[in-house]
Image (cartoon, rainbow, N blue to C red; front, side, top):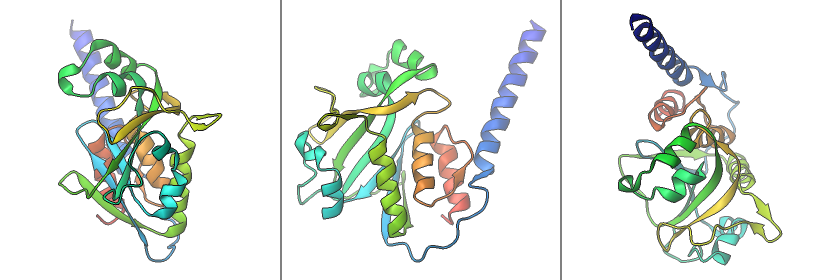
Length: 221
């Protein structure tokens, strides 16, 4: 019994150490050369287990993601200010719209291995304590759009919308590239996207809280 407890204590300590190092060690290690004033203001949205990226809408963004309107999302509506993108595990995303609907199998797949999906929502103004904003230059904004676009699986007609999968009239799910697990999940996708946008994150950020800390630590927030 003592050996098991000792092993458990060592395991917990190792996880804590890795998580701390993943937050405190920056990625990239050195700041990129200054690229001029930021001209695009993006948002990072957080809840206790998940992060999304909100992209400000203009005519160019609407054209880039015109498949959203084809899938029935009101991305062209004048009241839409942002398109919110998130990547995550298929089972957990599709089968857990609320915590009260949590099931064992989606949790098991999230902890092991699952297919992935993109969740996209058309939104108006966004504010709140769990929203962080960052200014990025135009070239990094274009690179971020490329990263997001490359996350969608492509079919003959473009990104593949998942039929009858949505939380509301304003969002849709699409098949995504890559596989999801607890070590390389939604928040590591967000972190990789933000690094593409020229921001620095921790080396490994599996949780929103560690990603938020590292963004504040290395991006002057």
